[in-house]
Amino acid sequence: MTPPGGVLRLADGTRESFLCRRLRADEAAAAHALHRLVASGLPAGLVAAESPEFFAAHAERLGRLLGIFTERGLAACAVLGLPGPGDANFGVDHGLPEDLLPRVAHLDGASVHPLYRGNMLQRLLIDWRLAEARDAGRPIILSTAAPGNHFSLDNLLACGLQIRGLKTRFGGLRCLLRRDLDRDARPAEDGEWVDARDYARQERLLGEGLRGWRSRRGERRELYFAAATEAAGAAGDRENSALAGR
Image 1 (cartoon, rainbow, N blue to C red):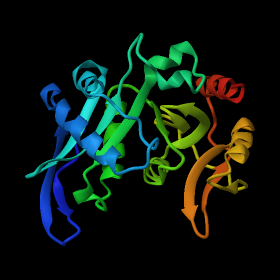
Image 2: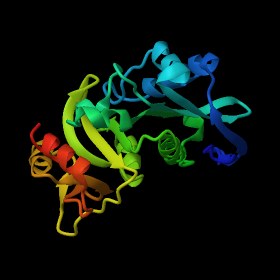
Image 3: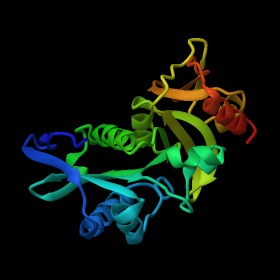
Protein backbone atom coordinates (compact mmCIF):
# COMPACT_ATOMS: atom_id res chain seq x y z
CA MET A 1 0.00 0.00 0.00
CA THR A 2 1.54 3.26 -1.13
CA PRO A 3 -0.04 6.39 0.38
CA PRO A 4 -1.42 8.94 -2.04
CA GLY A 5 0.42 12.16 -2.64
CA GLY A 6 -0.60 15.50 -1.25
CA VAL A 7 0.62 18.94 -0.31
CA LEU A 8 3.18 19.95 2.33
CA ARG A 9 3.23 23.33 4.06
CA LEU A 10 6.61 24.97 4.66
CA ALA A 11 7.43 27.27 7.57
CA ASP A 12 7.14 30.36 5.34
CA GLY A 13 3.60 29.38 4.33
CA THR A 14 4.43 28.15 0.84
CA ARG A 15 3.19 24.76 -0.30
CA GLU A 16 4.78 21.93 -2.25
CA SER A 17 3.21 18.84 -3.75
CA PHE A 18 4.59 15.46 -2.74
CA LEU A 19 4.34 11.85 -3.82
CA CYS A 20 5.26 8.60 -2.08
CA ARG A 21 7.06 5.59 -3.51
CA ARG A 22 9.66 2.98 -2.67
CA LEU A 23 13.28 3.90 -3.24
CA ARG A 24 15.40 1.92 -5.68
CA ALA A 25 18.79 0.52 -4.72
CA ASP A 26 20.52 3.29 -6.69
CA GLU A 27 18.70 5.86 -4.51
CA ALA A 28 20.01 4.47 -1.20
CA ALA A 29 22.75 7.13 -1.15
CA ALA A 30 20.10 9.86 -1.04
CA ALA A 31 18.47 8.16 1.96
CA HIS A 32 21.83 8.00 3.72
CA ALA A 33 22.52 11.67 3.00
CA LEU A 34 19.17 12.69 4.49
CA HIS A 35 19.83 10.50 7.53
CA ARG A 36 23.18 12.23 8.10
CA LEU A 37 21.64 15.68 7.68
CA VAL A 38 18.95 15.00 10.27
CA ALA A 39 21.32 13.25 12.71
CA SER A 40 23.75 16.18 12.55
CA GLY A 41 21.12 18.42 14.12
CA LEU A 42 20.39 16.10 17.08
CA PRO A 43 22.29 15.51 20.33
CA ALA A 44 24.80 12.68 20.14
CA GLY A 45 23.36 9.25 20.92
CA LEU A 46 19.72 9.94 20.07
CA VAL A 47 19.85 8.08 16.74
CA ALA A 48 22.09 5.29 15.51
CA ALA A 49 24.66 6.38 12.92
CA GLU A 50 23.82 4.17 9.95
CA SER A 51 26.18 3.43 7.06
CA PRO A 52 25.51 3.74 3.33
CA GLU A 53 25.58 -0.08 3.22
CA PHE A 54 22.71 -0.23 5.71
CA PHE A 55 20.41 1.68 3.36
CA ALA A 56 21.59 -0.21 0.28
CA ALA A 57 20.99 -3.57 1.97
CA HIS A 58 17.42 -2.63 2.88
CA ALA A 59 16.67 -1.46 -0.64
CA GLU A 60 18.10 -4.62 -2.19
CA ARG A 61 17.19 -7.59 0.04
CA LEU A 62 16.75 -6.77 3.74
CA GLY A 63 13.50 -4.83 3.55
CA ARG A 64 12.28 -1.66 1.91
CA LEU A 65 13.18 2.00 1.73
CA LEU A 66 10.12 4.23 1.55
CA GLY A 67 10.40 7.80 0.34
CA ILE A 68 8.39 11.02 0.17
CA PHE A 69 9.45 13.25 -2.71
CA THR A 70 8.86 16.88 -3.67
CA GLU A 71 10.21 18.78 -6.64
CA ARG A 72 13.34 19.46 -4.55
CA GLY A 73 14.04 15.74 -4.11
CA LEU A 74 13.79 13.41 -1.13
CA ALA A 75 11.82 15.12 1.65
CA ALA A 76 11.55 12.17 4.03
CA CYS A 77 12.35 8.49 4.09
CA ALA A 78 11.95 5.48 6.34
CA VAL A 79 13.41 2.00 6.63
CA LEU A 80 11.36 -1.17 6.96
CA GLY A 81 13.39 -4.20 7.95
CA LEU A 82 12.25 -7.69 6.99
CA PRO A 83 15.02 -9.82 8.53
CA GLY A 84 15.62 -13.29 7.21
CA PRO A 85 17.51 -16.30 8.61
CA GLY A 86 20.90 -15.20 9.86
CA ASP A 87 20.03 -11.48 9.89
CA ALA A 88 19.99 -9.40 13.07
CA ASN A 89 16.48 -9.57 14.53
CA PHE A 90 15.05 -7.25 17.19
CA GLY A 91 12.96 -10.19 18.38
CA VAL A 92 16.02 -11.57 20.17
CA ASP A 93 16.05 -8.58 22.53
CA HIS A 94 12.35 -9.16 23.18
CA GLY A 95 12.94 -12.80 24.08
CA LEU A 96 10.86 -14.12 21.20
CA PRO A 97 11.06 -17.86 20.58
CA GLU A 98 12.83 -18.97 17.42
CA ASP A 99 9.66 -19.86 15.54
CA LEU A 100 8.30 -16.30 15.85
CA LEU A 101 11.38 -14.53 14.49
CA PRO A 102 10.29 -14.95 10.83
CA ARG A 103 7.11 -12.99 11.69
CA VAL A 104 9.06 -9.89 12.77
CA ALA A 105 9.31 -6.58 10.91
CA HIS A 106 11.54 -3.70 12.03
CA LEU A 107 10.63 -0.03 11.98
CA ASP A 108 14.27 0.79 11.53
CA GLY A 109 14.41 4.57 11.46
CA ALA A 110 12.96 7.56 9.65
CA SER A 111 14.26 10.97 8.61
CA VAL A 112 12.35 14.13 7.73
CA HIS A 113 14.14 17.05 6.11
CA PRO A 114 13.99 20.14 8.37
CA LEU A 115 12.12 22.06 5.66
CA TYR A 116 9.13 19.75 5.98
CA ARG A 117 8.80 19.26 9.73
CA GLY A 118 5.34 19.87 11.12
CA ASN A 119 3.52 17.97 8.36
CA MET A 120 3.04 14.73 10.34
CA LEU A 121 5.35 12.87 7.96
CA GLN A 122 6.70 10.65 10.75
CA ARG A 123 3.16 9.35 11.35
CA LEU A 124 2.60 8.82 7.63
CA LEU A 125 5.85 6.84 7.37
CA ILE A 126 4.99 4.68 10.39
CA ASP A 127 1.50 3.86 9.07
CA TRP A 128 2.93 3.15 5.62
CA ARG A 129 5.48 0.72 7.06
CA LEU A 130 2.80 -1.00 9.14
CA ALA A 131 0.77 -1.59 5.97
CA GLU A 132 3.84 -2.87 4.10
CA ALA A 133 4.69 -5.22 6.96
CA ARG A 134 1.15 -6.58 7.00
CA ASP A 135 1.32 -7.18 3.24
CA ALA A 136 4.62 -9.02 3.77
CA GLY A 137 3.06 -11.35 6.36
CA ARG A 138 5.06 -9.80 9.23
CA PRO A 139 2.55 -8.92 11.99
CA ILE A 140 5.05 -8.54 14.87
CA ILE A 141 6.26 -4.95 14.60
CA LEU A 142 9.38 -4.07 16.60
CA SER A 143 11.27 -0.82 16.93
CA THR A 144 13.67 1.04 19.22
CA ALA A 145 13.88 4.66 20.32
CA ALA A 146 16.13 6.57 22.66
CA PRO A 147 14.10 7.79 25.67
CA GLY A 148 15.33 11.30 24.96
CA ASN A 149 14.19 11.19 21.34
CA HIS A 150 10.75 12.46 22.34
CA PHE A 151 9.48 13.14 18.84
CA SER A 152 10.16 9.64 17.52
CA LEU A 153 9.03 7.89 20.71
CA ASP A 154 5.79 9.87 20.90
CA ASN A 155 4.97 9.09 17.26
CA LEU A 156 5.62 5.37 17.72
CA LEU A 157 3.38 5.28 20.80
CA ALA A 158 0.66 7.25 18.99
CA CYS A 159 0.73 4.67 16.17
CA GLY A 160 0.03 1.78 18.52
CA LEU A 161 3.47 0.51 19.53
CA GLN A 162 4.09 -0.07 23.23
CA ILE A 163 7.25 0.08 25.32
CA ARG A 164 8.05 -3.50 26.27
CA GLY A 165 11.60 -3.14 27.65
CA LEU A 166 14.64 -0.94 28.20
CA LYS A 167 18.06 -2.02 27.01
CA THR A 168 21.42 -0.52 26.05
CA ARG A 169 21.66 -0.66 22.27
CA PHE A 170 23.14 1.45 19.46
CA GLY A 171 25.39 3.38 21.81
CA GLY A 172 22.86 4.25 24.52
CA LEU A 173 19.69 3.34 26.38
CA ARG A 174 16.81 2.38 24.12
CA CYS A 175 13.10 1.69 24.59
CA LEU A 176 12.13 -1.63 23.03
CA LEU A 177 8.75 -1.18 21.34
CA ARG A 178 6.29 -3.65 19.90
CA ARG A 179 2.91 -3.82 18.22
CA ASP A 180 1.09 -6.97 17.11
CA LEU A 181 -1.00 -6.24 14.03
CA ASP A 182 -3.13 -9.34 14.50
CA ARG A 183 -4.04 -8.64 18.15
CA ASP A 184 -6.04 -5.74 19.53
CA ALA A 185 -4.18 -4.61 22.65
CA ARG A 186 -5.62 -1.93 24.94
CA PRO A 187 -4.29 -0.48 28.20
CA ALA A 188 -5.98 -1.23 31.49
CA GLU A 189 -7.54 1.77 33.23
CA ASP A 190 -5.67 1.31 36.51
CA GLY A 191 -2.20 2.16 35.21
CA GLU A 192 0.06 4.97 36.37
CA TRP A 193 1.90 7.93 34.91
CA VAL A 194 5.65 7.80 35.43
CA ASP A 195 8.31 10.47 35.02
CA ALA A 196 9.85 9.83 31.61
CA ARG A 197 13.33 10.07 33.17
CA ASP A 198 12.63 7.60 35.99
CA TYR A 199 14.10 4.57 34.24
CA ALA A 200 14.38 2.53 37.44
CA ARG A 201 10.62 2.80 38.04
CA GLN A 202 9.91 1.97 34.41
CA GLU A 203 12.14 -1.12 34.65
CA ARG A 204 10.19 -2.30 37.70
CA LEU A 205 6.83 -1.83 35.99
CA LEU A 206 8.03 -3.58 32.85
CA GLY A 207 9.29 -6.46 34.99
CA GLU A 208 5.77 -6.75 36.43
CA GLY A 209 4.37 -7.18 32.92
CA LEU A 210 3.12 -3.64 32.35
CA ARG A 211 3.69 -1.76 29.10
CA GLY A 212 4.29 1.87 28.19
CA TRP A 213 1.34 3.12 26.14
CA ARG A 214 1.39 6.88 25.70
CA SER A 215 3.05 10.12 26.75
CA ARG A 216 1.97 13.51 28.01
CA ARG A 217 3.67 16.81 28.75
CA GLY A 218 2.89 19.19 31.58
CA GLU A 219 5.36 20.44 34.13
CA ARG A 220 7.30 17.30 33.26
CA ARG A 221 7.13 14.64 30.57
CA GLU A 222 5.42 11.43 31.67
CA LEU A 223 4.70 7.97 30.25
CA TYR A 224 1.60 5.90 31.00
CA PHE A 225 2.27 2.30 32.06
CA ALA A 226 -0.51 -0.26 32.38
CA ALA A 227 -1.29 -3.91 31.82
CA ALA A 228 -2.68 -5.06 28.47
CA THR A 229 -6.33 -6.10 28.37
CA GLU A 230 -6.27 -8.20 25.20
CA ALA A 231 -6.74 -11.98 25.42
CA ALA A 232 -3.26 -13.31 24.63
CA GLY A 233 -2.94 -16.45 22.55
CA ALA A 234 -0.34 -19.15 22.98
CA ALA A 235 2.32 -17.24 21.07
CA GLY A 236 1.73 -14.14 23.15
CA ASP A 237 1.88 -16.11 26.39
CA ARG A 238 5.26 -17.61 25.42
CA GLU A 239 6.64 -14.21 24.50
CA ASN A 240 5.37 -12.50 27.65
CA SER A 241 6.97 -15.15 29.84
CA ALA A 242 10.29 -14.81 28.05
CA LEU A 243 10.30 -11.00 28.29
CA ALA A 244 9.36 -11.00 31.95
CA GLY A 245 12.34 -13.25 32.63
CA ARG A 246 14.89 -10.98 30.91
